[in-house]
Image 1: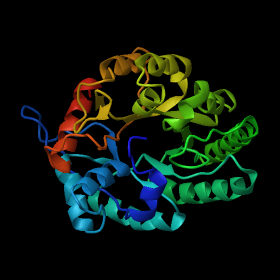
Image 2 (image 1 turned 180 degrees about the vertical axis):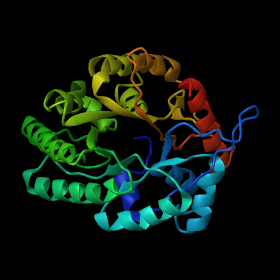
Image 3 (image 1 turned 120 degrees about the horizontal axis):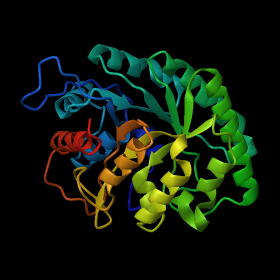
Amino acid sequence: MKNELPRRKFLKVAALTGAGVAFFPEKGLSDSWEPPLVACQQYTWFSYFRRAGMDWGKDMDASLNALTSAGFKGYEPSFSDASEVDALNTGLSKKKIWAKSMYVNSTLHEKVHVDESITSALDIAGKAKKMGVEIVVTNPSPIQWGKPLDKDDVQLEIQAKALNELGGELRKMGMKLAYHNHDMEMRQSAREFHHMMVGTDPQNVHLCLDAHWIYRGAGNSQTALFDIIKLYADRVVEIHIRQSVDGIWSEVFGEGDIDYHRLADEFNSRNMKPHLVLEQAVEDGTPYTRSAEEALSASLNHVYRVFDL
């Protein structure tokens, strides 16, 4: 995975914080202008801070100031436990920041872990709903991070059934479950990815389209990415936005390997407005020319241009 720190390891070491920001509009816009609903994923800030030798959330004020100066009004937090929600909500309320979606862990391919994972996700969701969260994003864990171990048919069936159950319970709560993938789910003809779609009820399990992980997992293929959009566009409720140049994550979300203009057009043509979450990140080989605030502010402005916001 190109040396990306797995999100679950990140959750164990990163401080969970709320994010408050004020966007500084370009000239020509009125003082009453409000930024569109674009959020930034918590992992993004962890990634850029780590590159600079800093710990995201260690100094709460400094972390929130970084978010503020970059221009975000929305934030997608990641939770490991329900006990973390209240502390985050305090920060969000103080900064008047919304959180429409959140990311939670789950282990669903082994029966011994299913009940515990579903209960944990529902406990977190119950608290998070009170702070405005509507979409629960989850990426069922692999057999082992960093190793090419594929789930067998039995495990895929167990996982799809559990995912559907979780989505059904969230639906009763008035929330939506969005399935998310990394690159490993695209191995073996993307059998894991596809079964999580065709093996679940579309009313219970939606899709968080992580464009770059699909692109990378398919061997850097835009054809595969847009085929998946054609197959499952009607289930997409959220898009994770990340760009690369020549296969390496770019410092700023801009023009690159993925044609995001075409991607935006695909959803505009369907009159769909998925929740947009910037998840730009850095890895080995990513240029280092800007601070996190500078890079992500420029990235946000490009999101506005590409999605015509």
